[in-house]
Image 1 (cartoon, helix red, strand yellow):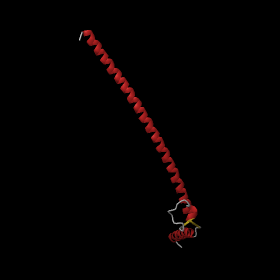
Image 2 (spheres, rainbow, N blue to C red):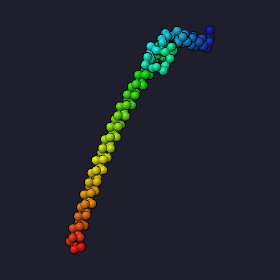
Image 3 (cartoon, rainbow, N blue to C red):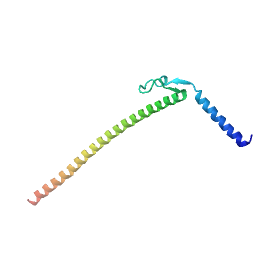
Image 4 (spheres, rainbow, N blue to C red):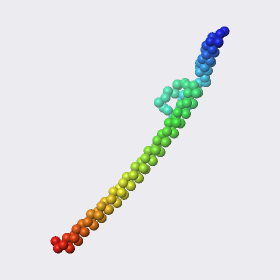
Length: 117
């Protein structure tokens, strides 16, 4: 057997071994793996590896939903804080502006009073 024939033979055997592993994989009912999903067909059969991946993905989705909820809560709190600071700043500016305008008005009145108008 030449080298290229041997490598082709090895590739075929490796492929055959891989396919036989897939076909001989232990089977488990999907309902045992995903009991909480009512929309899945409980009679469907999948390999244990796929069942484990489904469980891992569900855990990941659950974790991501929790993270999203936490981020939304932080964002809401930050928006509330920003709105509160904006209101305090606008109130302060109104007070300062009122004080400046009121002070100018008094100056004008005082000036008018002194000039005899």
